[in-house]
Image (cartoon, rainbow over all chains, first blue to last red; front, side, top):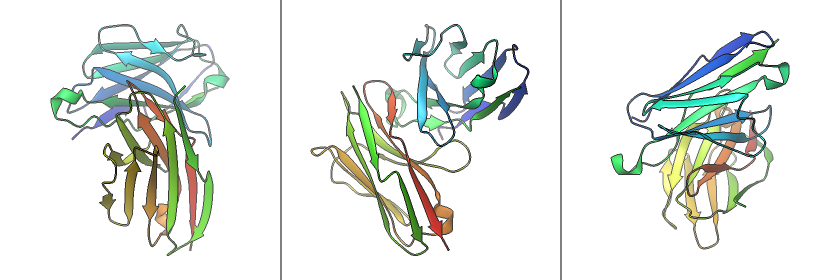
Length: 119
Length: 109
């Protein structure tokens, strides 16, 4: 149980275009999903917390207008990198936490990640 | 500010050795401490610890939490080359996970 599907796993896009990454919880409802960015040889950096039906909460230093997050349902959150530039190239990972009231497991399950390369 | 500190940050051992990874934390409203193993892609879940003193085991891996001293250890016995990875410690506070920098383990044949 507690599977999170993330796609695409890899995307290459041209500078100036937008890219959408999807994160789905397959067998549980996730009122909260998290989006992380990982630079090479660094730990995961939380970008934003995505709450179903409301605006995402962004961490300090993360541009809201650049990284658009939509959490329209209890099983889907999307991250759109708008007007991508080469410095946005990175590994993006989502995670979801099952609601603690739905079975007791409140660990975090990660998607498989998306490698974004902006050329 | 919530903080998770892992040590050592890197370690090189030979197959068969035993390693101990440390994770100390300071977070508000502690809920759980999680250990992940990250190879090439996203982290894979190893353990979730919520109670002090109860060891969790999975094969050659084990972990324990000390909520009084605010730390956890992850032990790997009889290491194998397949254990080479980055091991991440994360602590769940009020809402979000706070990660440590990770520990890069290299197991040489």
